[in-house]
Amino acid sequence: MHLRSKDGKWYFYHRQVHAIFSNSVFKSVIGEEGRAAVTRIKSGSQYYISQESFCGDPVLETVFRPVVEDPRRADSDVIHSFCSYLTEAIKAVAPLLKDIPDMSVELDFARECYLAVNRLADMELPILPSTFVRLLSQVLGPVSVPFTGEPLKGLQVMGPLETRALDFRNLVILSSGEGVFPRRSSGTSFIPPELRKGFGLPNYEYQDAVWAYYFYRMIRRAENVWMVYDSRTEGLRAGEESRYIKQLELHFKADIVRHVARPAVSVGSDTGDIPKTPEDVETIRSSFLSASSLQNYLYCPAKFYFHTVRKLKAEDEVAESLDAGMIGNVFHNTMCALYTGPFAMDPDFSMDRKTMKECSGRALRQISKDYIRSWLDRPDALRARIRSLIMAELHTFEVSGRNLVFEDVILQYVMKVLSRDLECMDARGMDSFEVLGLEQERFLDYDGFRFKGYIDRMDRFAPGEIRIVDYKTGKVSDEDINVFDDNAQEVVDAIFGPDNAKRPKIALQMFLYDLFVEKDAGGTAISNAVYAPARLFVSPVQSIPASPLFTSLMKERLSEMLREISDTSVPFSRTVDAKTCSHCDFKTICGR
Image (tube, rainbow, N blue to C red; front, side):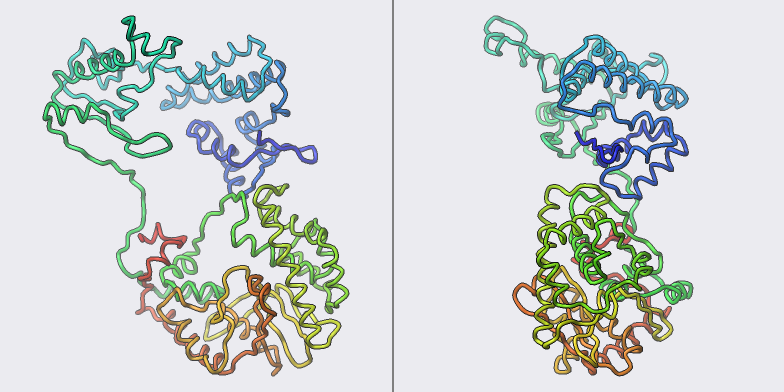
């Protein structure tokens, strides 16, 4: 149902693909080329994965190929093709299992599956593929493979029925959970339980009595009995222990000792502060710091250590819908494409930094009212560009579900920004404004450390001023943008203070952006504007002139923090704020 065709190519849904990748049998039979392909596919984080991505490994090529092109077609030929596909897949995997000693049971199951598929193929069933899958599941459900072994040597594995005439010294009973042992299900019958009881036919009470006999006969002469069950709750499974355990404990006063087995997951341990070495300081000095890295240090020095010093990052996952960060990326890229020029609004135009840098000579320098109005009158053209950027963000070729809602939301954001820019020009009596840079990469050397950042937009609405614009789709508070000489000390104390919840991080970011531009401004007045759509819908754009006192105080505190970072006697401490740890990418290895 999730197979897709586009431009003559077939694509597979990522969930089914990753489920197969996680299968132990699959991981055992693929070769080196197959493992490389799996790694490449996982790192791509694609929503739909093309058939070409699986080339190079026989198992991958056999498993990942289109078979049922129309799932709504009930035809015996389609079912026959499906059966042929399944038998070919088994033939490709089964010979490889012979060379793996630990896969003998799986090899027996492969044989049973092969026989079941062939039996169904001989029936020439004119049914839907989905019906065939359910039918095959019912046929394979009760299939079991008996364990074989030498009765007089080693560990013996047998079912309850086989233990009736045997005595054991040590006994391990697996799957001793309620509903599994004793078995909850009873044989299907058209005769109601009341009639079965009335005519003396076997019913579920009789089945319970038989299972109880098996159990108590089994443990009759055993010296040690271990009963193992899964206590996890999942779906309708309650994870309860078998009733026999309660009976032994309450009726027979047996000495029951319970142990909880937990998986041996390797995690870090919170052993205190992380020592800082001269090599760590050298790594930091050779790296580019940014506003986010400084915020990491202020929030938790240990997080700064893992991210900046150890160069760790969270593994990319396939996203089925846009998250907050992705919505921000699409919004940023749409505004960047709009003010770059009409050629960048082509849905096929790439927005990567290399392409944008190569096309910088073609970018618009003046944004006129007529240009903005032309786009406001064509929301469908804006929507087409937004959709292409959403597909690029999700690594897919279609937009569906809740992503269609996000598409409308981003469109409203973009149109509101355009309207506010028109208002800014009207307020100054101008017909256009000058664009000084879009997604501009900036560098700065400060106290022996290197900084790098990307400014969303630099423009000029009046001679003698430079405005630094930052787009924010997240929450923006007044403390983040309303920074003046009157409250400069208060804002600085909040930025470098211990309260992570009240830290005005946008103010820190805008300060760094001001430093990036300051050396090239030549005395030109700098102002900051934060375009937060949530605020733009209720109030006009605020352009706040950079506060000289705030800049001076921030430089002093930044120098102090950089000296602390370079001091090897000051370790990387862990934050005491538990809320910060709850959404940290490194909480597992950190031990929190």
